[in-house]
Image 1 (tube, rainbow, N blue to C red):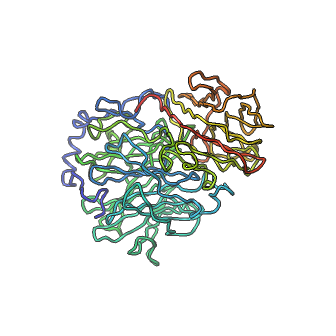
Image 2: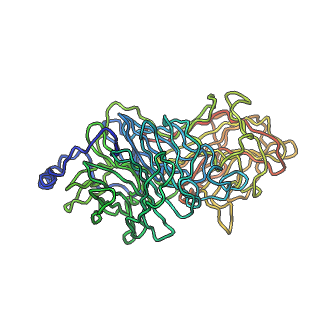
Length: 554
């Protein structure tokens, strides 16, 4: 079956639409969500699960862009784009659409997409894995996604944690994005996607029976408008719905069309929510129905800043047979909702980013390398309980955007987040650099290392020194006589970070204060650990543990 969830149907039939419209003004008074004013974007002091049966948007104040979501039983699964980071396409799990944890990634080897995503090239900032869709069909999870230079790909798994099948190219051609699969009640599969190089025309294909290819001769253009993308196909009560977003004026807004058949004819478009610049244009995401019959839209806010594109959860109300997103206004068009009742009770408060003691056989799924790493240059087995990172030259001197051993996490936009890493230094060699880095993934022609900052250790002539860098320029400080170092990055809602050092993990000394975090290449800032050695392939550093305090909230 091919509804949002295979075992559910909308609780509202269209024959009740007239009655609902008549009662809308009264019903709005009882809605469990609040659409009132909110502080300026990004200045929230509360978010996520409030612990009192309610939640506050954003539910994920971090860079979880290009979201999609599906439900299987009482469990929700979501995906988020990862661009050039590896492993690719983050997979998340939740029981309530508010508290999420990262359970894995769908793409273990980015070179299956292109060698340009490997550590020895690193030529895909702002490219790589873009938006996709996750569905559960025929007993398996399926993820389809696009890359702007290579085309559409698919992978599947019996469990969301994986293992995921090797990537299969569905369409090898540049210029495509925002694809989604759809399976009709008879099991026949379809794929929808946008050709942004051809005026944002939206195409619909039939898929081959194995769901890995497109049937020749079935390609049809079903819609085109300014910036039309973010495609999803749904079927509710026998009616087919095409969800998409488009640009109206200076804003991206969510739209929908419907049809009695997958082949049309498609109705005129219906706007589902007002364009909202103050709320950073919620737009790309997925519609899902909860076990209790209520409907929701899990979305990112699409105009980025230093923390990237945050995720929010909005209620969906069925009006005249259309899923209106947010709180309906007098015209039946949705408006932004900042607070609501939790979709489920008894959930454990959690967040998809966090620390790691490196005690497992695999890296915690909260981590992503900058590009596909050299797999022989890091290890969890060389010294159990530690992450050993070997040093080798980068591709552009000390430019940390071109270093092959950079392990990162997303930056959280909260009041008092901090990430602390403890590094053991006995294995360092002359010329080696190691430490903590914050960066935005955007090389620039004038300064290809711009928007990076680091604090750490460099070894010169057998001695270790503290050092900091900013925008690729390194400053050596005093000698460091200890065999270990604690490094901390701490930032706040103002988007300014301070990098600090400690010899005991208790008393920290600021080394670089108020470094401005930035947005670039569709991504927010990242924080992580690194090592490299321009003098050759020698030296290593052992990362003992990383503690990530996401500040207030879950």
